[in-house]
Amino acid sequence: MTIYVCGVTPYDSGHMGHAFTFSMFDVLVRFLEANGARVRYVQNITDVDDPLFERARRDGIDWRELAERETKVHIRDMTVLGWRPPDFMPRVSDEVKPIVAAASKLHAKGYAYMTDALYFDTSKYRGYGRLSHRTRRSMVRKLREEGLLGKVGPHAKRDLLDFPLWRPSGPGEPAWASKLGEGRPGWHIECSVMSMRYLGAQIDVHGGGRDLEFSHHESERAQSETLTGKAPFARAWVHTGMVRYEGRKMSKSLGNLVKVSQALQRAPAAAVRLYLVSHRYGHDWDFDWGGLARASRLVERLRKLLADDARASRATKSKTPPGRALMAQFKRALEDDMDTPRAVRVLRAALRQSDAAAVRAMLAVLVGTASLT
Ligand SMILES: [Zn+2]
Image (cartoon, rainbow, N blue to C red):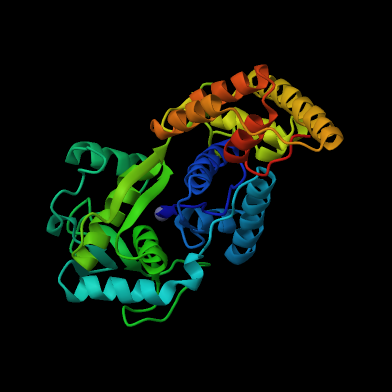
C-alpha cells in the first residue's frame, strides 16, 4: 500500500485541526499494518508556500527559521500523540530540481504556457473539477475566497482556473536558478512531484484535509495524469473534516486555535488521541473541553485495567489472548470506511468485559504509542 498525505505548511503547526488529520491517517496506517499490509507512507513538509513567506515577512524572520521551528513543533506534537512516523517526510526546498524537470516537461508537451509565470493550462485536462464535483463557478468562487484567483491578461493567466507551476520570487522569498528563469515552484506541482518521486506514478491513497480537495488535489491530479499519461493518479482520495471551535473553523486568522500543547496540559496524550479518533474522519466537528475530559476518564479506567492485568499476569505467569468476538467487531468497524467512533465503542465494551489483551490490541491501533498517563 502506498499512501501520500499532504503535510503541514510550517507556519502555524500544532493545532487540533492538524492533529485530527494526521491522527486519522495514523489509524489507517496502523490498522493496515496490524492486518499484515506493507505500507509505504509519505507526508511532505510544504516549506515553499505563500502563507509561510507572508508570515515570515510579517514577523521579520527568515522563512527557513520559521519553517524549521514549526516543522519541529509538528513532529514533536505527533510523536507525543503516538504516531508511526512516515517513511519519508520530504521538504519542498530539497526537491526543487525534480519539480523544475516536471514543470519543464509539461511546458515542452504543450500543457503549460509562459507569460509572467509558467502556468498549467487547465483547459487541456478533461475533467478538471470532477474530483471535487465542482462547477466552474464554484471553483472560481473558492479561488477568490482563498485569494488564489489571480488575474487574466496578456502578461498573466489565460484563464482564471489556470495555476502557476513556476513563478518569479517576491522579496524575501527563496529563488532558484533554473532553465525556466529564476524563481520558485507553484504549490500544486510540489506535491505531484514528491508523490511520484517517492511512491511512483500511481498510488493507493492520497489524503489531506478537505479544504485541499479543490484546488490543491484537483490540480495535482490534472498535472500528474498529464505528465505520466497514467490514470488514476490516486486510486482513493481521502479527505478529513474540519475541526470547529466556538462555532467556527479553527484557524489562525480567526484566532480560535486550540493548540495540541494546550490540550496536553489538561489530558494525557492517549486521551487527546482517543478524543480525536472518536469522530468520523470525513465529518466536521466541534472541539469541546468536556469531550476531552470524558476521554480522560476513559483513559484512566483503561490504564487501571492494564496495570491490574500486568500485575496479575506477573503473578500467574500466564497470558490470556484477546476475545475473538471483540476483535472481530473492532476490525469490522474499521473496515467499514474507517468507522473509528464505532471502534471506540468496541474498546469500551472490551473495558466492561475486563479484556485487557483486547484493550491493548485496540489501543495499539487507535492511539499508537501515545502515553496513558
Ligand atoms: Zn499537497
